[in-house]
Image (spheres, rainbow, N blue to C red):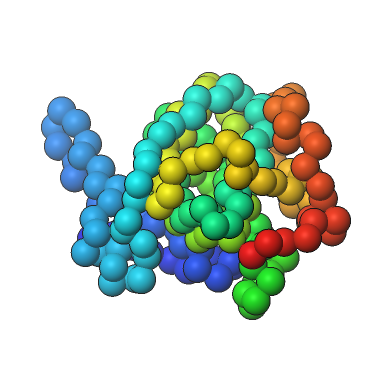
Length: 181
């Protein structure tokens, strides 16, 4: 059975998966549609992918524009990341707020990111991170949007030299952003 905890952003959840420890391997169940439905989480995932990033990389804050916005389920299988979600939904009680969690190979946690929120992360530690995503609508590069990773005074825990993807350097700050959500 999963443990599900509501985070500071409305509709954003930290999920602790079921881990079956055996003598030769651990089996980690990261998704079960029946259990997700209990919490009202989408189970209609259409695409899965993973990213590999080196220590010090900052990515974000990304989202997909309407009408193709999507929910995301994210975990860090190898390495460790500081994961951040910003609420961009104008009608949300938590509009303009962010939440931050640690995802890593030890805690095995996942984060559920609702549509209308921006997502980003920082690779902590000394080794590359393998980050796994499930999304409810396919990724469409032309509908990719973002806000600047350094918006809202997010307290990133930089322990390595920081490297930011060139496209992530040019997103507008949250304060300059006109949300379509």
